[in-house]
Length: 421
Image 1 (cartoon, rainbow, N blue to C red):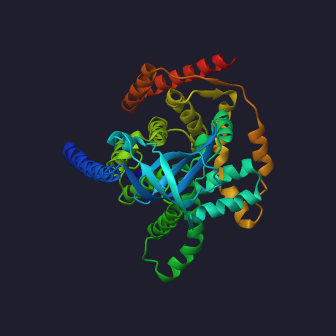
Image 2 (spheres, rainbow, N blue to C red):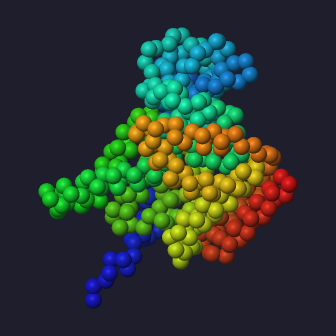
Image 3 (cartoon, rainbow, N blue to C red):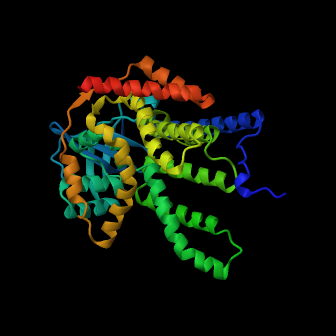
């Protein structure tokens, strides 16, 4: 009797301890080589007391009586500097700057660093995406244009708007990452499928349509990534998507913790700076808790999974986020609902801009940003943070710890609600 394809089990990524040790050895070798390349770049930067570099301004914002600039060097590193000059809006513009190197260690270089600098000259070149962001500013009022700039072009968000987004618990929705990449992939896949399938059936039925469409989708996503100048969060998500598809195409189980840990190790091996990137670890934590939910809640119906997974991830991330950031308000209780609605809002916002109705959702966004919530600062102690991480890892092994983790997360939420009332 022939087995049904639906009953076939996925192949595990590793079938022996020897394979796992070999993969670990390859990752360590790759990490060592990447770290060595970073050290060579660090030596070149710190060879003299000053260093002249061509940069473009990735972010610019006012702090008290001076400007803070995040600069991306053509040599591959980014850093912060400041200026007391009366600067106009120079986001996206290319500059020649002199960097004054003082007491910069290799560890600081990897973690992200500040350098005093002097702007020597401005160049006429300007990144295309920043020109398009200026077009958005002409279409929307400042608050709304800031949201769309972040959503479409990875633009920076002013601190007052970011505080409002934090009060609503939706900061993560505006930072382009794997969530956005997933929505874009879904839209592109089914759009291309409508066009490609008829041609494929008539002219080359022997080809694997899903594989061909996947190539088109990844090619378009890469162009978007290139256009955004390889935004780190999106680059990481793109690399994870490529890896996940390779596993899927070869019939290897994707939703496994082994696959997740391998991808994380591979990304760190390629980009050692990720060890110190908080956004990266938040992203990894979110994916981990999604896997954990799917691992233990296999019997739920699709609509139940869709609803409960948003609630679960919100609760699971609560102690993780509040070890680093203390902001909490009652508005954050709407975070799971807003995350679900975002799946509709994101493609809709793209569509209305393409069709020429860009301001259609502006009243809704203005209202959302006008909501006021009482905000408190609550931080999780280090020992609680370590305890939650420990329980989370044990939850991989046994369902009891999954429920225990859920119970503790509910306790944290109750503690926060008690503090705000």
